Every structure is written in structure tokens, then in C-alpha cells.
Length: 94
Image 1: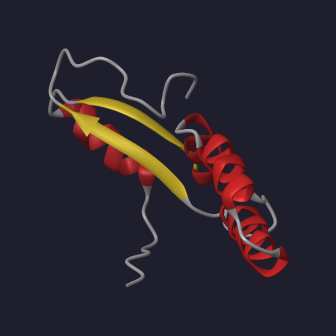
Image 2 (image 1 turned 135 degrees about the vertical axis):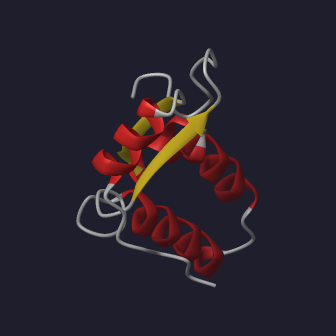
């Protein structure tokens, strides 16, 4: 199910910070997924893929998720945590 929504991350992050929350991001879906190890996982899947069609599907799926011309820069990710929390995985460089 696609739960996509237009989110005003600047306003949401501002409100969260004003309430004392620790905010990570927003960052692009591409950057977040790559920090989470998407490319290493794709390499493992490619190494185990039984044929060209499976490999092509993996490559196309990764491209769709991270390519800036597709979903990579259109979709954003943010994390909202309690005060005093530290950065979470996927936001190390965000």
C-alpha cells in the first residue's frame, strides 16, 4: 500500500523541535536507503540471483528507489525522537 503524502518537513520539524523533540533529517530516500545498506544488500541479491531476468529486476528496483530522476530525490525521510536522543541509523550524515 502506498502511504505517500505531501509533507511540509520544515514545518513538522519546527513544531517537533519546539515541543522538545530531537529531529533527524529530512534527507532524501536515496541517501537514507544507501546509508541503510541498500547497495550491499542489492549486491548480495545479485550474487544469488538465478538468472538474467531476476538480476534485471533487482537492478531496476534499486534504480527506481535511489535514482534522483525517479523516487530517490522526490521522497524524503525524517525521524522524530525524544529529547536527548542521538542520531539514528540512516541519518548519520544528514
